[in-house]
Image 1: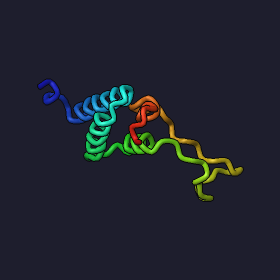
Image 2: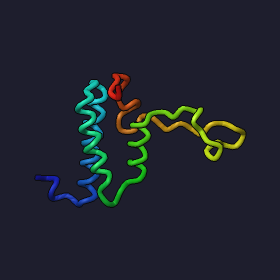
Image 3: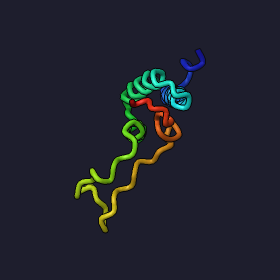
Image 4: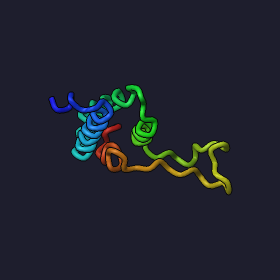
Length: 105
C-alpha cells in the first residue's frame, strides 16, 4: 500500500486524521455505536508512543463535555474568583461529540 512506503510519523498523522473524520461523521449522523468504536480506536491510536498529549487531552475534554462551574475547587479558581475557562469544543468532532443526538444516554 502507499501508506507503507511513507515515514512512520506521516503514517500516524494520516491514520489519526482518518479516524478523526470517521468520528466526526458518526457524531454528525448520530451513529452512537459507530462513534463509540471509532473513539475507542482513536484512544488506542493516541496511546501509542510517542503520545500526543494535546490530542489525548482534546479527546478527554470532548468526551467529558463542558465542566459545571459549581465543581471548581479553590485551587482551580482563577484570580478574582472567576471560573477557569471551559474546554474548547470543535476539535475533531466539531463540537459536542454526540452532535446533540444523545450518544451518551
